[in-house]
Length: 69
Image (cartoon, rainbow, N blue to C red; front, side, top):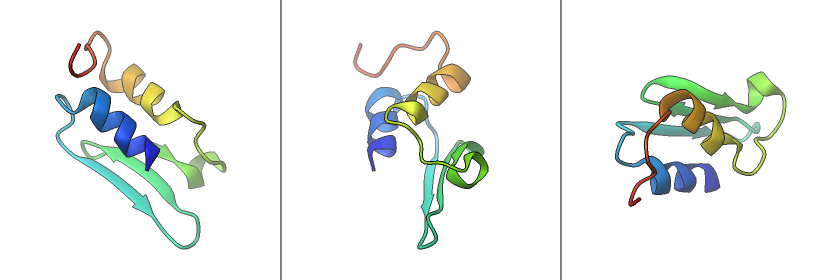
């Protein structure tokens, strides 16, 4: 799961809870701290490479340095 790896590698210091939901019918949801960040079903498409990380940075990490910086 590239999305989980990207998020935890860059923002593990501010993420309290990260849930990825996958399923046989192509479900792919990313919830961060109890809030939906990306839903394949809602968007009707797969996330682009780096899209989940970008969404997280815009919504939850404005002004926050990436982990280890």
